[in-house]
Each structure stands twice: as structure tokens, then as C-alpha cells.
View 1 (spheres, rainbow, N blue to C red):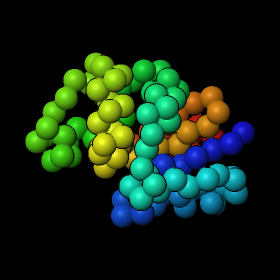
View 2: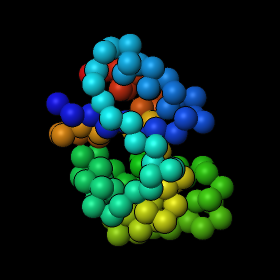
View 3: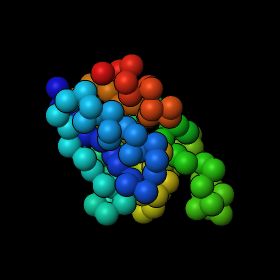
View 4: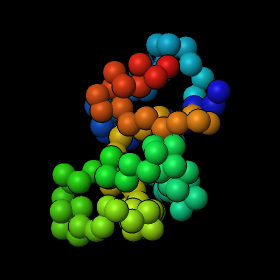
Amino acid sequence: MAFTLYHNPRCSKSRQALALMEEKGIEFKVKEYLKEGLISDEVAGILDKLGGDRPAIIRTKEDLYKENPFALESDEEVIAHLVKKPKLLERPLLVSDEAAIIGRPVEKIAQAL
């Protein structure tokens, strides 16, 4: 199974998720989404793997969201905003071929492995 960890090195939870994956010896790709950005199809795929839980993928407590809130009920709105402002992506986020897991708390990732 292929794993991708959407990672922000400045986030302690994201660093914990990275360390957990390394400790378990699991092969995975790291995507530093703040540097690399996000594309629409990628975000749509993540939403599908989360079972359409759009609010879970957005950092609604982030000032960037509070200053410019948008409809969390709309896939199109969520996708468009994440592509423009990847900082709004909740992290850490582990994506496999079948599922996506938001690692808050990080133990959610450990349970899924």
C-alpha cells in the first residue's frame, strides 16, 4: 500500500506523525504541501477518501479562514480554497490508496496502520 503524508515541518503534530511513520518502518512519500501546493484533483481525491467530511479537512481556527470564511458544505468551495490557500489544509494528513486519515490526535494514524 502506498502512503503519502501531507506534512508541514513547522507543525509539531505533523513532525510527530512523520516520526511515527519512520519508527514503524513504513514506506511513505512526504508531501510538503505548503511548498509544493495542491491541485484540484488531488484535493477531490482526499475528500472522497475522507468520506466527504469537508469540515474536517479545513483548519477553521486559522486566521486565514476566519478572515475569509467559505461554505464548507460545497466540495467546489473547499477544493478551490485549498488550492489557493494550502495553509488551510488540516494536518497531519495521511493518505493511502483506500483512505485518508487526519492525525489529530496523531494516535489516529497509529491506529490506522
